Length: 119
Image (tube, rainbow, N blue to C red; front, side, top):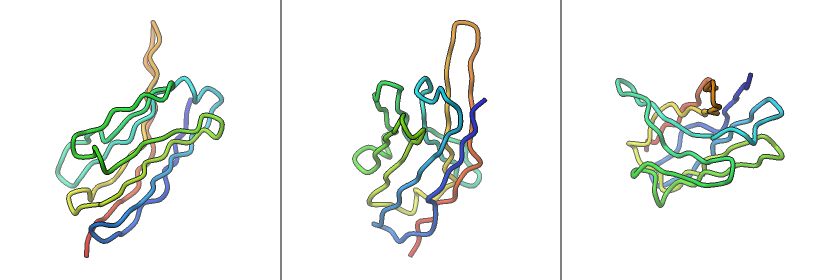
């Protein structure tokens, strides 16, 4: 079982920056692929970025060049640095942990943190 707690959301003006953090419980954090997703009102939840246990990263096109995902396996945390924020980045951001084994998939979500980009 993994519990995820996000923090760092808030209100920011266009062009501003925010850093989201996700703290994970459990001693096998390093085995999970960690991701950030977001969901705007009336829309589906979409991937923003993910990072493998080896540090490989993947970004949605909308996040490339502006967002950076990172993880600290010693501290069981994953972060999302968001720069040059735009109004269309407004959404609830969710932390995700997923791990696949031969027989099972383990998939956990945080409660979400609101990011609002507005002047």
